[in-house]
Image (cartoon, rainbow, N blue to C red; front, side):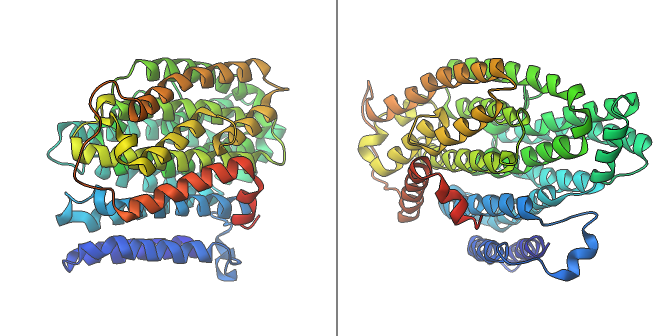
Length: 459
């Protein structure tokens, strides 16, 4: 909870920096606060907060996923100087809202109670409704905001209805008491219906097909840095909450919901990858790519073992790093060309090789090519699920093979353009190049030496 308080106070300070017309410093305030929070996440929790353990507990898994989310947020804040250059009048609000949303994510990492789960989901989501529409002169951004808000409210209705049925069945909001009830009463119809409703609600939040329909439009319409935040930090928080709820609270009725997950995985992997092939806009292609990765991640529910949480964390970190690597390239191209079609990237590899190589390594990692972190992440999850769900693993492998086509298309455009090369007098900033080099190194190092991940995060 110490980390949560630090990030909350950082968000408040960043917000008030704008009030005093010092919004340009909000990014540095945010980075400093996040670095302090990252350091504190390695320290033992203050005993004072033990009285709140029945609602929120900053245990080993919560600490691990919090560290990952903080690292990714820091990288995104480094990219904000260029990305938010046309939001000079309200930069402080944008950074503060991202930090408030991160607070919701941290609550989801440590929730022990369905009330805390609801609060975490809403604190995570509400700032995003504003952030999605922060580009007020862009109709796509306005559409993204209202669509995200309406679908988010719809999902919240499912969530609260499910919570009501769970409470009506068990008489408790506590996750572990719910677990005990499920073990003793695995055939309670009201309880099962509540679990299914909560599954549907969180399937909306993580973008499992067919509950993903909001994602492509929202991701494409939102400002690109906000899209990167939603595709990485928000995905980490929402999927871990999904994983924790289903594997602790509803573990006793696994047989009632695991087949539903299996069907959603098949729909997600087929639909997202086929639609990804059909896209002519890189940002929309990445949106469908993000949906497909939820399908791969959902295999974590099969063949559960003591390493499942670690495998999930590794995959999410590898995927999030790759997302930042591609999106930073897209942010720069979009600023210069004012579009994100494939043709906008023509010849980028010859003009800005470091940026293009970072995007290339990131795309290869997303595709699961060997010697990248993405390959190790997929391998660990597929290996865990292979005995219990061999057909689903086969579907996931085929989905990965299909995804290579649309990832390679962007790589070919950047390095082997058919038309004129990418030409501009403006050069990428030193900050972007440093972040690009870090992502290249991290994705390759984790692919070759996967144990580095455990060492760096204090495991």
